[in-house]
Length: 296
Image (cartoon, rainbow, N blue to C red; front, side, top):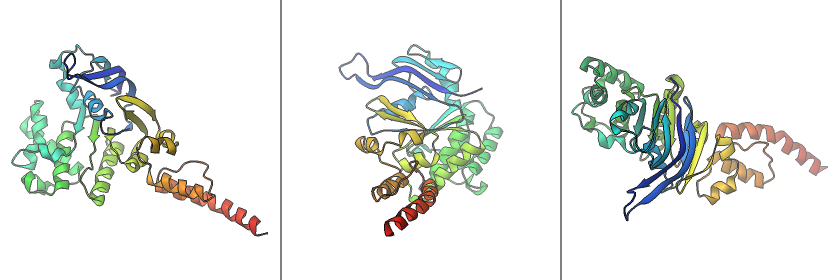
């Protein structure tokens, strides 16, 4: 079954009909396609976290409808029937290691599946499998999660979400607090899960290089509205617009812009270091010819 997630005219208000009511999402229309790698970007307060909680029905829309696979969720939908959605759409919240609590790594990872009725034996088999998937070997199974490094603890927490065998993995700033090499490893791991396990990935991030390197679709949120959406090529084409929105610009695109100011002409805005290198190789012969003519 295709696990598309679709929002139709979705609005969300915190504490409605009270003096504290606050609207967080306005009339959102969007689709996260099954098998895609979708990035959600926007400032603090743009509505990213609220939108994210709709992806597995942790909250229900105040207005409109969210469709998750073949399930439709309306404001009046009964909460009792939503548990299975949380197995299909796994959310890794920021600093997920803070939610580890069991005495061993194996028990922590097995907790979720057991909660969904999987036998102890099968749950521990899943724990072993998913631990390997996040790059940790069997020697970690009987260790206490609290004696691991921060990066290892985060991998264990992610393995716990993967043990539910979701079709969609939602990642909220998954590399926050990690050093550059830890961040790189973590992003490579998610890319592997996306490619090899065909997981749909939804990445909430403020790092535009990660969006340019990995995502195939981007949603830009501002004050509860989707203000732009499309492929990274489309969204990152207008550098002035990105700067105006204070969203940051992929490093390769910013560098290409500096080269353009020095007279280099790029047919296409490069977003990644590889694309920038390819464009420079194309541009250099043209620049050399122009230079030769100037010398004549």
